[in-house]
Image 1: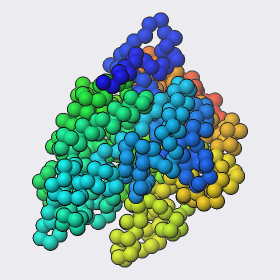
Image 2 (image 1 turned 90 degrees about the vertical axis):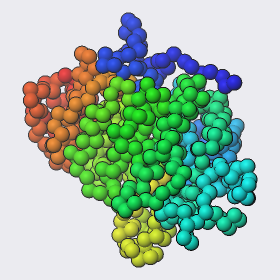
Image 3 (image 1 turned 180 degrees about the horizontal axis):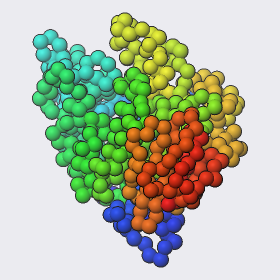
Image 4 (image 1 turned 30 degrees about the horizontal axis):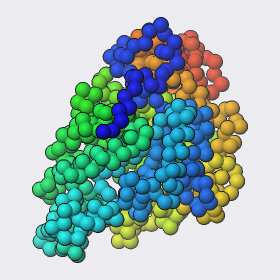
Length: 580
């Protein structure tokens, strides 16, 4: 039997609430208080965080060596990208052995030291759970492809071809068909992602039980939850009908008939026995569908990543020129659709998306720091659990890619073959998109200092090139500068932790149509805060709408002391928080 790890509901306590005469478990506006709602999560991409042994690849001992850096920042949950044994066709998202650590990253003993170091610092660890698919080198698939009679055959989706081709017209997320012919049995297997990532058949109860077993293995080891990779794709329609003209294949892939049944079973059999945090990557799930997964009364997942924010800034791999009212609408729609029983995530970047300051801010030399501080304010004052991606606390930027040879990402490489080598698109146009949207923008090595390769590695050949701006943008320089992006994140994380209204407070956008100024309130009982941000390099004289007046200025990214007024004189890319 797994050991039960249920803990009191307030494991991470907000100081201001802990100091009250009594502890409540439900807020004035109906939210059930839990540690994962009050947390700030920091995502670590292990391959790019810190190399400890000079092989050019980040590793687990490297992460352990930087735990004090993360503790000082103020984050209290670390999300560790996939650390499992893998041939790395998709940088660890193709898993060969779920109970073994990737050789390049270290050993299980190294993982145990990392976990102990996190616990000693009163932080928590969640890990990636990648169970929509495995590697084709996983022992289950090695057996499955041997014969149609093999006991593991039904661990995956095998189908005969149709009319001399694949079983249906499903495309892969990584270009080409989602079906691969295997000559051993002359049948096709399904892979919604890379050819080396065959999809698991969750309709097979043995698959589900094996998945639940590996989840218990890591939870019993002491991890505090999971970020669940493409979890909304685990249920398939076994008939595999062709996509109809105009159908969005992502929506079809996410509309499996048993998704909620399987998530509820997972919760019942595994998650409910531990005090854990779960967050799902929810491809193909609309905002309207979101409560079906995250409403706490349904007992599925705690929260999901809704991709509306990603769709604002890009269409597929193509850059999209977004407007501030479009960005605002995402948050207003989420606030309206998610009630006190459904919790949200707040993120602007991750390992699959470009750098936040290059995407939603202004990464020029003049405006990089001010705009990074505005985006930090947005992340840490919205309603939901904020997720910070490594390097965003430094204001790291996109990489100036010039050729496809500089890119390692399989998604980009396959798209190059499909579009450029077939002359559907020019190389210049393709690379322009990559400079804005490539996943490798966020995967370049962490910039620790101004020494060679930014202090990430002693190797002269890191697995992915370091951004050439590392001499001016690095952790050592920012730790020494009290006005840096890092210290702004640090102060704002601390301010959020002692301000319940910024966690649980109701949200209202006061001027949705303004193209330059984002202004909203967060209200919890008598606590009322006004957040004002300029999303432009232009200075703005801004009259607050209605009868709203700015009260005491309690937090600012600039030098302003302006308060107790209905008209604000805002600098370009400036953020302020007022107590009303």
